[in-house]
Image 1 (tube, rainbow, N blue to C red):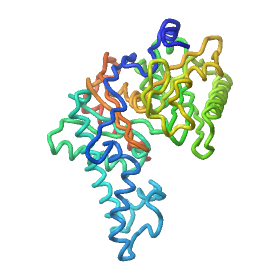
Image 2 (tube, helix red, strand yellow):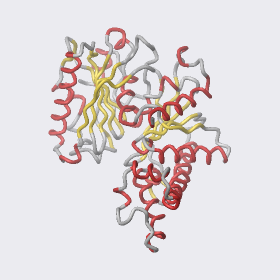
Image 3 (tube, helix red, strand yellow):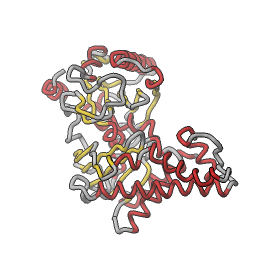
Image 4 (cartoon, rainbow, N blue to C red):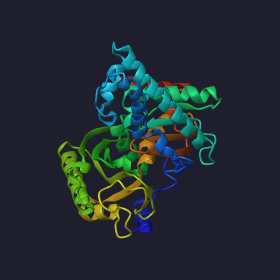
Length: 378
């Protein structure tokens, strides 16, 4: 489906749109360089492991490395979290040292973003990605905020509210036009990453909260495509099969499924649904001018229920950030950083304020995220 047909027939924005129902996307996927290379590489999941390894070297020489011979990249977040609260004080101090260094790097990177024109006057930043889903990630985020505030940056920095595995699915709701929610109670969402593809059935919760703050993932399916190393066509075929399975499940459970699929995908997304750059970790060449994921999926799923399928795709950092829209109505300008294989980024400006979400003010908005992060750990 061509972009002009998409807008005319469905009333939804084009792929990678700057203007969405609730926000303007001021920027996304910015690549900033310094003398050492891309800035995002300094605050990625791999960067933390490298920092941890540097701190292990001096204790390794004396034969007192608490991790033994285990490579730093193989140590799980759970193991690191357990050490933080364990009885081995030296091991805990080692992990804290790595967290401090990483926080300094994240503060440096965040500082550079805040000094760009696109990120000017940003009031709050949420941090997502897999790194956030750990105690060490939460400590690093909190420490980064303290560093920035000590330098007089008036910025809130906090973990993303939804679990990182679900934020990219919930955020897809905010790609859809409001008419979707009046007649339907759920949509299909896809979150594509360099290692995994996750599909989910997302319940809007629109009748409970028009701002979508009650939205939730009802069920999801994960495919670790990196293990299978499929062709591009094989990946699309598997994704189509996953989505068809969710459609069947939605019908079986009595959901009023919208004829809409929201997709989060790495890279710079063009208006026609092609990917300009940034998809190098996906199976096959997704940046080819001959490949269009939304068009390929519509071929496989031309209809949902009795209606033609509409698909909207955006950058994965943008979509993960969109999951925070209901909880960002007390600020005007806000951003998201996603710490994973790389550092995803997006900056938003709210276009309208929902009365349902402004009652608690800025302070409460931050506390809500902290409470949510706490409940996730429990």
